[in-house]
Length: 347
Ligand code: CIZ
Ligand code: SF4
Image (tube, rainbow, N blue to C red; front, side, top):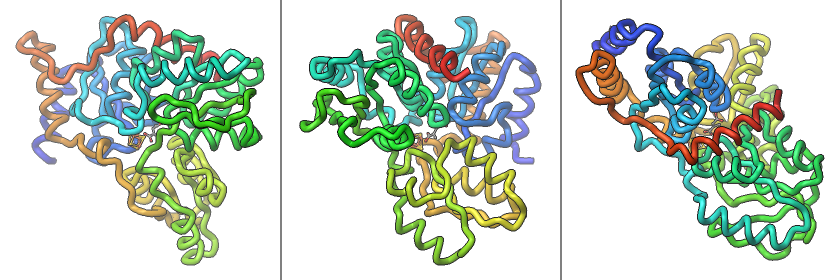
């Protein structure tokens, strides 16, 4: 066994129930192999809210570790191997821009506007939503959360992912007149109807935006019986051309549980597609194209070992933690409200 793997395992064993390692599906295989929980951002947030471990060593990107710090108890300590691992999409909105946009759309719209924020966002943006009666959503429950507010007669300010917002609008049967685009500087695009139902921020994930209809058509030419499954952060054209669209957990379960011999083309992050392909050797699993999230990919055995060594020293009272992730109490309280509203609407 690799020396670093051995060292990480032995510190983990020494800490026992005092540590958990959650890892996102998009992490490298060697990190996933050492994780206690594996999942998408929603499942990991729920898992982190249920653990009582003193240390949560989160392997993912920064907003996910912040999410763990929001839902964990105050006595729990969250650390992450690489605090520089961010999410460009989450960084496409900040509180100043959001406040500016919210004021502009509120002056245009006769209805109350409820902010719904994708999990892929900072804790301060989740707090922005929580403080305005809004909720967090994930790709697996965005339709349900948005429908909940529309059915209550509200309009929704959806951020930061434009593609997910439009794909939700399509599922809900909203017309183009009912959608308004909000530019990333917080200004409202002209031409929106006065009674718009969904105001959508113009953010995107470069990993998912890179898939095209041509990628799908090329695979359909190569494999006549292929089924295409994509993440709803892909464009609406790609989602329309695919056979299925869904969250990472949905993609994983559908392909894993499919009959042997079936052929799948997957449009999501490459580490994850490769892992599904190697776990499903009874099927043919190919990527629409190789699209890697470099932020998810930076966490490696070296950075995990450095972080868990520091956790071990802290546990023994011999040193400081490295890379602790904290959320100021003022943000934590409102961000938690937004996460709890999501769970209440979904369950
Ligand atoms: O694109 C991402 O970062 C996703 C799909 C995160 C998640 O698990 O929801
Ligand atoms: Fe952000 Fe996209 Fe990477 Fe997910 S895959 S962390 S949304 S850049």
